[in-house]
Amino acid sequence: MGGEFWHDAGCAFHPVSAPDYLPVKQLRQMQLHRLQAMVTRAYDNVPLYRDRMKERGVKPEDIQSLEDIAKLPFTVKTDLRDTYPFGLFASPMNEVVRLHASSGTTGKPIVVAYTKEDLDVWANAMVRCFAACGLDRGDIIQNAYGYGLFTGGLGAHYGAEALGATVIPISGGNTDRQLMIMKDFGVTAICCTPSYFIHIIDHAQKVGVDMKALPLRVGVFGAEPWTEEMRKRVQEETRIEAYDIYGLSEIVGPGVGNECWAHGGLHIFEDHFYPEVVDLNTLEPVPDGEEGELVFTTLSKKAMPMIRYRTRDITSMIAEPCKCGRTIRRISRISRRSDDMFIIRGVNVYPSQIETGLLSVEGTLPHYLIILTGDMGLADIEVQVEVTPEIFSDKIGAMEQLQKKISQAIERIINIRVKVRLVEPNTIQRSEGKAKRVIDKRNK
Image (cartoon, rainbow, N blue to C red; front, side, top):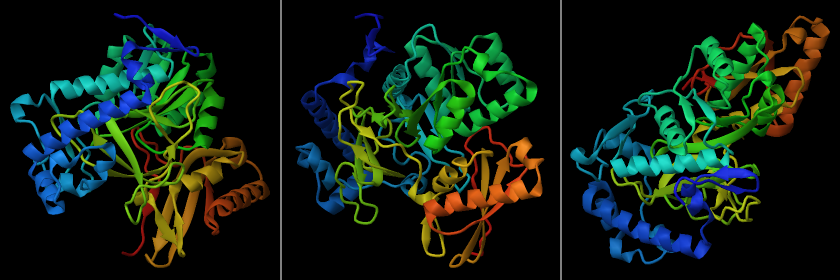
């Protein structure tokens, strides 16, 4: 085996991708063995898990099948804040080789820890992500995710190196330099948030760089929800193939799941991250194909095991086998989170629904802002949308017609009428990281 690469339906993959193709029975046996060991480790070393399992009358030896995972308690984000900074660690600090943290914009940051073995698992998962995107040795990967406490930059970096690709650790920002490096270094793949790549495309047009003339062929986009309409816009304007990558710091960082060439959902690397989809209200498992909240249990993380972590991401499990031949399960594309939802006149609305509507109308740009005003019980919504320079400089009648089309397109999806305001290009602030789509000015 050594350093060889095999090819699957025209898509290269690294030897560590082999778990993606395990017979299902063998995979389930591996998952159960790892689950039992992880639950024992959490029970023995993390007071929060031990106390909650005792409350439920559950001991590690009660986990005799994968179905027994339902006996275990859920974990939520506030648990990480309540035990800040190190209260959920299952390893002593002399075994912890790295710490990451969230930005902490809503209070104390979320702190996550890794042993050397955890970092190896993370790199393994990221190799499998890149391989699923058709990347291989010889590819030049421009990593424009942020480095530092955010998990995106270093997660993608070490995975790309483990793949054997050439990594450019450029981080986010300085878009002129991003384009210069892309051209001069012959970059074949880029990793960043989809909203930042849209900004790169816009800037390239402004400075006269033809993105379609570059050797860039793959984009690995994540860290924020994005829609199929956004993918179409990106691919039409650059000729790259855009892949969705999924992850969250609480579980490992980027690399929990990824699309393959079939683009039929995200494969979850479930030999390390066991997925469940549960009903938003009852928290009971839902059938394959039915939407619910995604829940993860880490199966091999030593420093900070997570038991049934509620992600707040809305998705469904896909039962059908994938065309690529991978046996690991898939989830449908995540375009929204339960905590992103806001209620307008009694209707549940997600930002992704508004994006789908406005991007279906020709002449709009994928830069928008949702502004909520009024009282919480009776809020008003305004959607600011950038339009192309040609449209903005056109006659007032044409602008009014476009405004009406966008409003109708959004109304068809969310069933309520919203106020739409067209703004000129480059009016809405760009983000080098996760895009801020909603400004909430409601009276609390």
